[in-house]
Amino acid sequence: MGPRSRTTAPSVRASKVAAGSPPLVMVTAYDAPGARMADDAGVDLLLVGDSVAMVVLGYDDTLQVTVDDLAHHTAAVGRTSPRALVVADLPWLSYHLSTDDAVRNAATLIRAGAAAVKLEGGRNRVAVVEALVDAQIPVMGHLGLTPQSVHALGGYRVQGQQADVATALLDDARALAGAGCFAIVLECVPREVARLVTEEVAVPTFGIGAGPDCDGQVLVLHDLLGIEDRIVPKFVRRYASVKADAVAAVAAYGADVRARAFPSDAESYHLSDEVIATLGIAGSAAMGTDATRTA
Ligand code: KIV
Image 1 (tube, rainbow, N blue to C red):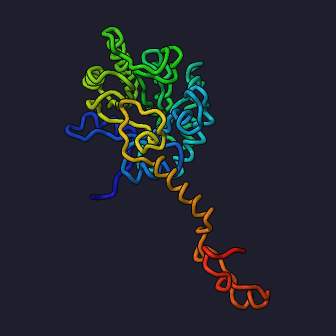
Image 2 (cartoon, rainbow, N blue to C red; image 1 turned 180 degrees about the vertical axis):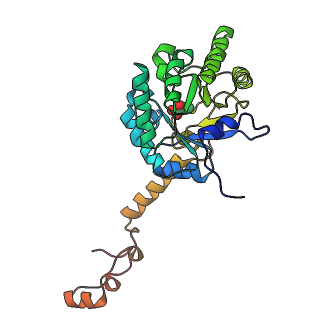
Image 3 (cartoon, helix red, strand yellow; image 1 turned 90 degrees about the vertical axis):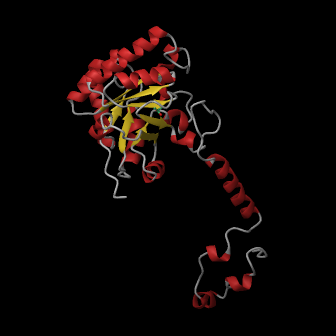
């Protein structure tokens, strides 16, 4: 297998028409280690999601993070120079007040290290998407369960289960594609709705809780790794138990420290025999084994 080429917004957009191309893979990344892990694993896109608020920063919703917060995390991801396309979320209120505001805030994320931005909403965001595209900033849309609308939606619920809502969602997707979005995330919508949108719009769809018929899939890295183990949404598949493994590892370290089994002599720095003699002190050999040493 040759070296993996860089994913770009145009290459993601073009994958829709490339017959038989495998689904695209996107995961969230909020810092350099996460970005390196995901990029080494060969994902196509890294999403610096506003889910950082809940997954990393301990907030109860995504409304708490600012453009500066997203820029800080985007910069950490960007510094790893991944082959994957770095997409940064425009946080709540960063694109709702004016299109000028939206372009300026998106530019902050691009300068921090993103190569595209994502925003939530459909026909009501067409003017913003057009302004961003006009400023040469690739935009990803996000429909269905849009967490920045948690209060307006009345909670985190599956969207598009009624015929009129499903039709509106399809109209929103068409509008976003028409305005220039290069891809659209579909979150927590029935499989049938996601398939309809995927068949009807000209740009790739990325599903999260939207079934297997989308052009790509996205998951929160901490969910798939099992770092976040408190809530397990139906659509999450766990591929590791990193939280459990980490708890066991830290507990083992703690037990070793308390039993004086860590650090060992081999894990310690030493003086030369000459300096030991000059100081007139005991060398480590005279201090017994690590387990028996008392001073
Ligand atoms: O912020 C995020 O993690 C997201 C994904 C759920 C698509 O927007």
